[in-house]
Length: 147
Length: 352
Image (cartoon, rainbow over all chains, first blue to last red; front, side, top):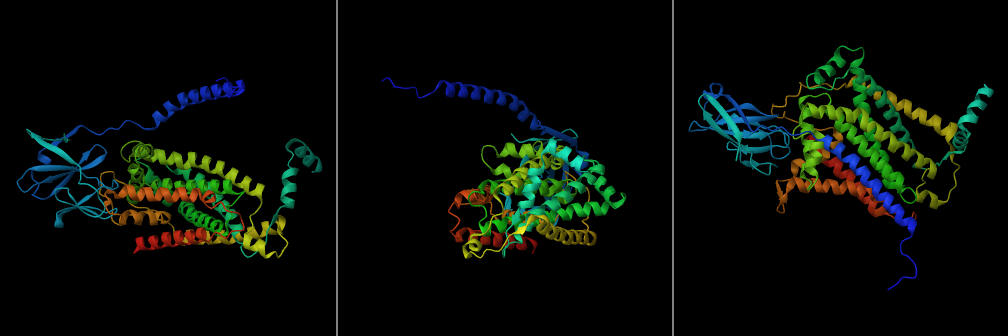
């Protein structure tokens, strides 16, 4: 079918061509700027610490260590082993503390509670504390991301 | 003098502006006091700019120095405690009056045609003001401000698709660190001021272009009280209001100067009793009350989505209630009251 007149005037066609070109150019300029805004993240693959610092902990006590920019929490278990957590509340990212008398982790921001194994038991936290893998090599304690 | 005036007039053509101001009238009715809220916000904005520049002379936005430099401003700099106190209290006054301004306009339906764009720029200004408060809260870098910032910047994470990216943009990475502090500082002293001045320019221009809105109930009664000439009658009254507010501000700032907590430690547990600024309390309380899971969904996501829906509704009020001016709009009035009652109630609850 042949239309009696064009749906698209030459002017409209050229305008959208130039507009599209300008938009593409703008995007090309802006994308590197957007990329610049977020720096690379630096979560460690593993951290190590001398075992001597943690050896004398009593069972059911917790000691802190630095997991990159976040606090890590190392807990001595009943059997004498270690388990480690990222000490950051899974609700809204506040740092948690260990309440020794109650053997529970507590987040003061919105009153979230975790049991001593990091399981969320009360308040708003949606999931357990993040676990890290602990191993001992000679006299060094090695804490890694859990596989 | 006249030569100088003529010289300036020829080059700038300011007579159009002075003529406009000479002719400008402010309507007189029982809601006239609402017209003072806008200019009072400008007063506090001006105070924020002046005291903010002064504070920036000595403030150092680094991990090591931020907290110490605020302590130094308060203890060593001549009247530094007062400058910081005025900055902090003036922010509170400004936001309080912003809320009065907003509610006044919602109740009198002043956002209706042709003033939709004025309302939208106003909501942008509200957003910028709250962003000023949020970024400024971190700068003293004490325990409370760190914990509040962690929570605040974590909220967008719950939003699907781009939420995680937004959190990274706000934090300068996965965690709140010294980079976050630099970022908040530059937002507070450069990005937000540019944004607020741009929106303010459009807002004020639109207010002048459309003239002051008169509530329909006043217009309907048809009692024609002559308007108040803007110059000098209204301007002098305004000056009186400013003086009272200024006196109130200085008094409060002297009597109740804000303190500063111990320097923030990225590794320390969150302190007891963390609280955001008073104007975020109702959201804080809502987050605290929301359970981990709601109807099988992440509770945090639901809470954030409700907040976003609320903000979108606020922004779009003129398009939701686009009825002609003679309709009363009882639903919007009711919703405004409900929103106010909700915010006040939740805020008080969070303080108990």
